[in-house]
Image (cartoon, rainbow, N blue to C red; front, side, top):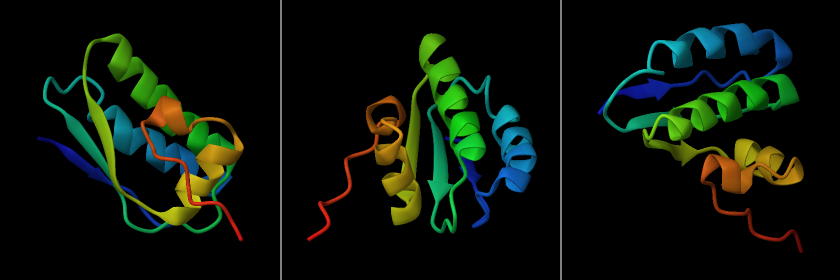
Length: 95
C-alpha cells in the first residue's frame, strides 16, 4: 500500500510540491494512504490539490485514505465543505 507523507506546510506555495508528491501515486492500483501528521496554515489551493487527487482516484475506482489527519487540515476541510469528499470525519464542535 503506497503512502504519501505530506510536509507540514500547506500554504499556497506548497501546493506545487504537494501536487508532485500525489501525482506519483495517482495511478497506484492499491489503496493509497495520504499521511498528514502535521499541518500549519492550510491554504485552499493545497486543499483543492488533495481533493482533486482523491476525486480522481475515486472516479477510477481506487481507494484513498487520509491517515493520520492533522487537526488543521480536518478543520479547513470542514470549513470548505470537503470533509465528506475527502472521507474525513467532521472535527469536534468548538465549545
